[in-house]
Length: 73
Ligand SMILES: [Zn+2]
Image 1 (cartoon, rainbow, N blue to C red):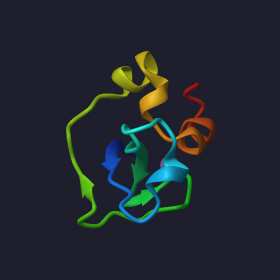
Image 2 (image 1 turned 90 degrees about the horizontal axis):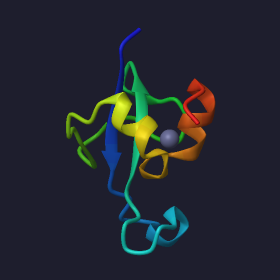
Image 3 (image 1 turned 180 degrees about the horizontal axis):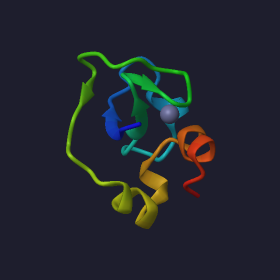
Image 4 (image 1 turned 45 degrees about the horizontal axis):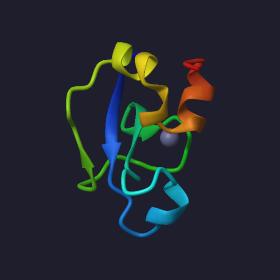
């Protein structure tokens, strides 16, 4: 199963995302669905080509639930 990390720009609820001004997070997508179950892929997602090793190095940039589900902590 191919897993990709996409950046979510949450325009509806920036405060809940935390992280001050940097409130966008990467979510892990498998078959166009975020593994945290909160999102499906649409135009609000920008594919940036980030690799999973970047997520592992900087876990704070990724969705906590997604990381927990796939065991990247
Ligand atoms: Zn997520």
